[in-house]
Amino acid sequence: MIVKDPAALGPVEVAIIGSGPGGSVVAATLAKAGKNVLLIEEGANLPQDSCQPFSFEEMKQKYRAGGIAAAVGRPNVAYAEASCVGGGSEVNSGLYHRAPGDVVDEWAHEFRVEDFSEASLEPHFVACEAILQPASYPNTLPVASQLLRKGAEARGMASNDVPRLVRFSDEVDEQGVTRSTRFSMTESFIPEFLAADGKLLSDTRVQRLRKQGHNWQISARWRNHKVKIDAENIFICAGAIHSPALLQRSGIRLNAGQTLSLQPMVKLTAEFAEPVNYPGMGIAGEQIRDLNSDCSLGCAISSRAHLAINLLGTDAGPAHAVRRQSHLISYYVMARGCTDGSVRALPGFDDPLVSYRLSQRELGNLGRGLKALAGVLIAAGASCVYTGLQKQPVVENPGQAEQMPDSLEPGADSVMTIHLMASCPMGEARNRTAVDSWGKVHGQSGLYLADVSTLCSSPGVNPQGTIMALARRNSEHFLRA
Amino acid sequence: MSYQNIIIAISDAFQCEHLQDAGVAVPANDTIAAEIIGAQRSMPDYLRLPMYLMTWYFDMSGLVRSGRRFQSLDQEQKLGCINAWRNSRIGTLRSFVRFYESLFLLIALQEDIH
Image 1: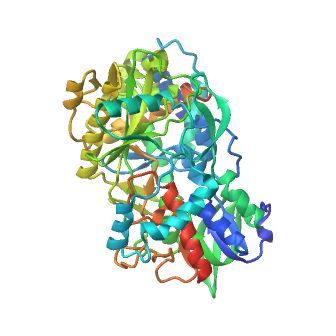
Image 2: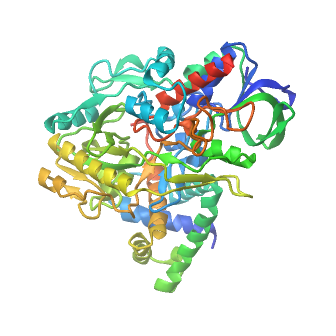
Image 3: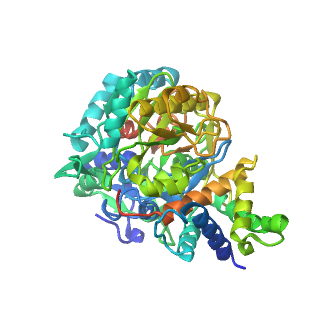
């Protein structure tokens, strides 16, 4: 049921704050188990096709702060977060990974997460995958992927078409690539939740939580009206920034927001003599895992506007993106982040202050990743690669790629991220975790977290698959308890 | 001498610098400026106020360089002001130019799905 008037809501058994991949999975799991569940979302309830994917209109409709935010540091790191029913799944490329086994073991050991291993997570990954069915391109790969793979093979590196959360259609584009559309939360878990009598309340910003007797009282703002909602239990699933900020605003501060991690990303643009880019080119899911730099190398959005932005600071300039759009493709380097950031709710401000300090390790990994990527693209036949680096702005041959610096400069202006995490890590190591092994907030009854904030550190891969598996694991534990 | 005039002047300068010879039709500068201001309104509040203040300061910086506010300068002088901040050793000033350049290009070069 879509809630039209929250003032008429009675107490609920479970309120879930945030409807991204974590919140949606918790909501569907608990509603299907017969719980009286209310799913609260700050953003709007929009269909998947309300706007063009990766457009400025999408940023306005579905991103928090219009997609314009930055973690303060040296350098500042631009970031974007979704704010709509379905959260990040509505706006991302849907690349699907499970958390690597060594990362799972690291979390279990260092943060003392109970009953946590690849084997114990397996059924949760399998259950989510049964619904979402991540899939690779059935036939021809997009040109951007083909080129990355060709370059990787020439350099002796492994390259894979990462499965994505999409539905492939029967149509192909002008290059014979099967068209696809996102298979997001609003296409999967949210309909399951609603079919199980779940209640969805959108356009509602939760301001703080207060314990009253055995229940929690939620103070929120719904379309400029103040509302109060009572719930026996609360799952906070508002993301790496807003989950700890809500805890802090509610007076709960133990290890909340002190260890923000992110996966920093930089881009470069390759130019080819022959046309390689065309209107409607699908999202290219090809990725190289570069062990030397602990980075993923992959294909970025290559629309005219994005190409132009990526050419800022190069001699070619944005006009080159307009004139040579069909010959240009952008690629990214994404590093595994450290945990050198923080989230702080500031008195009198709506938004928390986000800060992050890129470590020497991250700068080094990004530099080596860029170098490896430039080498791959030259090997793939690029006539030149625009790196955006001051010391080696254009690379035209393998020798120049080798001369690229081994580390990004601390003052680099173009670092960004779409993956923020680990601001409320889970585990039994009380000195460094905010929630227990099952997402329950330390020292609180009936208050849980089930989103990207509970990851112990950056997994080094796109985190959505891991978030959903953890959300399902924690929901089932809640039901058993 | 409104805030909108400063944004229009910044947008105009970027259009001349980046897209004048590109052979592409872009929205009018006041349309782009309205979108930029709309985007600024939705920024996190700890960034929004500093960005407003820096934008006014940037406008005033034209007085030091060329005796007039940025919005009243000719194109060459505007580019001089922008380059001074773009090449500054202070990262915040570089980020300021990068922010407006990126937003301008995102709005000016919108297209159908690509």
